[in-house]
Picture (tube, rainbow, N blue to C red):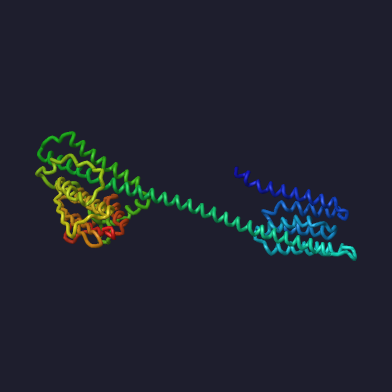
Length: 428
């Protein structure tokens, strides 16, 4: 189909050249003063019009010279100007206005001089002058038509460029929205599922540890729960990595060394969690009565569920305290959800990676910002190699998206701290 469209202008231009050649040849054959030279000049001038669109200066030159020869030798009528008009139109359309003006002026001057020279003595030359003025008007009309066509063509090209740019912009925005949606889904999956799976895994590990310490036979179902929860965590991590785009993965890989469950090195950026073996912190069986983790709720999470979240952390044997300061009030939905998820992720990391640690949660309702701080007193060194993960990356993304600041760093007295400052804006 594209080849047909490409050849269509060539066919139209060829047909135009043939029609002009036939009409001009007819005028030559009916002109008693014309001869073979005039016929050849007209045919060459007409044939050159086939290139008026692709190489406009060539037909402008050839047609003008050919018709000048014819006009100077045979004094034809005004129809002899038509091939030159077509060439002038094509040249102006291509932006060659000066050559077109020179060609039209030269043809009209030669034709006027030849026609005046052929006027018999005593005859009024006024009709010849009027005819030339009329032809001048037609040449001006051809130039105006070429200018209008040129501007219209430029407008259409610009419109096509704008349409193509708009389409590219829409595609980029769609890809960006899809990427942001994948990141949002990844964060929600991580925050909502990882905590519950971690509770199951930690409690199963505690139960297995206590059973073996007492010398009891470990039930096969308990071992299956422990293994299945570990598999579920690995599958979840793989799913989250698929959902994240390359940029998010690069940011995850760029997390600094010396990460922790609640933070990273003291550079204001969150690092990876500390690598510590899962340990049974309480041997009195407190975790054994909570093998069934609370199912993930469908409703949005916020600080109104903070007590439930901390209670679940305590059920795994993690000592945790909560302190709320400032005037407790409704928060913007995104801030409320982000604060909850930050606490959830920090407590999950403490439970998973900081054996024997206690955690403290502090929520400070300020006038313009909400401060969320989670600390643990674990003894892991900041030199411990980080464990790759996406939880802290998601935490940072949440805070950054809200225009806030996140610090994750080791505490001088041991353990780590996460501090998120979330702006409230006018919505608070």
